[in-house]
Every structure is written in C-alpha cells, then in structure tokens.
Length: 334
Image 1 (cartoon, rainbow, N blue to C red):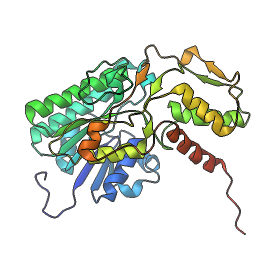
Image 2: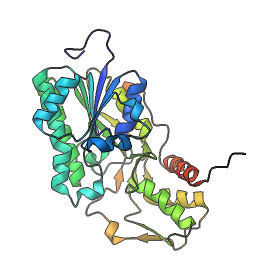
Image 3: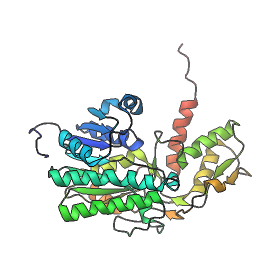
Image 4: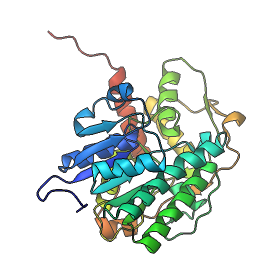
C-alpha cells in the first residue's frame, strides 16, 4: 500500500495517456475492479471530456494539459498516491516515427524515466507498468518472441520503446522499483484511428464497395503480424499490474497472419473479387519493415492465466461488424 493511503480506502490507479484507445479501455478495466482512476493527458483540459467520450464515468479525476517534466511527474505521483501507475502515453505510430525520430525518442522515453525516478525517490511502493511494443524484437521466428528474446529494433518507434524498456529493467534490478514492461503486439478496436492498417483495411473496403474509391493501396503486403483485440490486451495489462514481484510479459495472440491474407479476408467479407484491385504504393512502403513480427504468449498464460480471445481475421471481422452497424440507418420508431 502506498504511503499515505488510509486503511480500507479504495486502491488508486494513475493512467498516463488516458485519452488514447488503450488508456480508455484500461480505465474501464480498473474502474470495474473498484479502483479510483485518475487519467493524465497532454490534451488541454477543455478537450478532455470529448476525448474520453463514453468512458468519462471510469475516471475519478482527469488531469489535462499535463507538462512532461520531472517536477510535474513527481508532484503528481505524490499528490495521487497511486497503488498502480500505467504509462500508455507517447507516439504510437511506427510509420510516423520515421519522419519524426527525435520527437519519438523524447515522447516515448522521457515520461517513462521521470515516472521511474519519481518512484525511486518517493519510495511509494506503487507498481508500474510501461507499455512497450513487440516491434522491439525486430523480425521474429514464426513461433514468436518472448520477454527474454533479444532486442533488434528497426524503426525510431521500436528503438524508443526498446531503450525505455531497458530503463525499466535497470530501475527494477538496481533500485528495486516495482516495475514491469508489457510488450504489446498490434491490437485494434473501434477506438483506433484510421491511420492504423487494420482500421484502414475496413474503411478502404467499405469505400470500395460504395464506389468512393476504385482500388486498394498499401505498402508491403507480404509482412506478417500478430494482430489482437485491444480490450483483450488491456485485460492482460490489468492482470500484469497486479503481479508481485513485477515482471515483463509479452501480450500477443501467438498467431501470425500476412497483411495480404487480411486484405483478402476483407474482400470476401464485402463480396468483391480481388482482380486488379490491389496496388503497392511506394509512398506507403516504410524505410525499414519487419517481414515477420509474432509474439509468444505462453509464459503470459502461465503467470496471469491470460490468452487472446480473438486474433488475425477475427479482429477484422469485429471491426467490420462495428463499422457496418454504424453505417446502417436506424429503423424509425413505429
């Protein structure tokens, strides 16, 4: 129990990056378990209500316009006195990171370090989970990477997440901070923005069916990824945050599917033949990409009893179902 919390008081959780897909879903998980949840975002305070639309009741407090500096982080940790801190903040697009490397390194590194230093100095005993990425392992075997696999990052995003994970390990091993890394492989939901590839597949296919576009443009179609469902993955992070001692976990479905197979599955869903519709757009090909990125979640199941409920084409199906339900006009009341 963090110093200063009264016996019998509800446990507290501090979530950085509260307005993103993962932050909102994670807040729901903690709130449902009875935690007092405080969400933190760099978005201006007047915009927060809109940013967490549909999830506002999950938060006992929201801190907007947050400035990421050591003093601000230390003051917030001291004021909130959380039992658990989860860091979901930072730049989350691999593709965008190639054009913004310095910003990516700063966004994904500084806050993590400041949180760890605040915990070291305060001795609060709070548990901390840092959201890293399966991208840190580089190209994996089809059997997948686990939490002990070597790092081989290929993008600024992956380098930033790998270096931050190493800082977490150091603070845990040297200073005894109760910190773990969640190596999250790609995970989607209707909350995810259209710039990510699986939501892009859904939107592009619906536009194709409606005649708004005449072809499908992607970067490499041969890449293999381990796609999962975001709410599943936040369940895993919630469980990981309860572990004592803290440890690092791979959160993945353990199944690799090529982007081409995902697109073909989507074409079948909308009843369109593939002939001549797929185009490789050089502008969408990354300077460096991973032929195969798959996670091995077996140790995760052993430690927290978690396994993905939905992977690959199943994720695409769920997004299609949601998108088509939104497009369907409501039946007028009788």
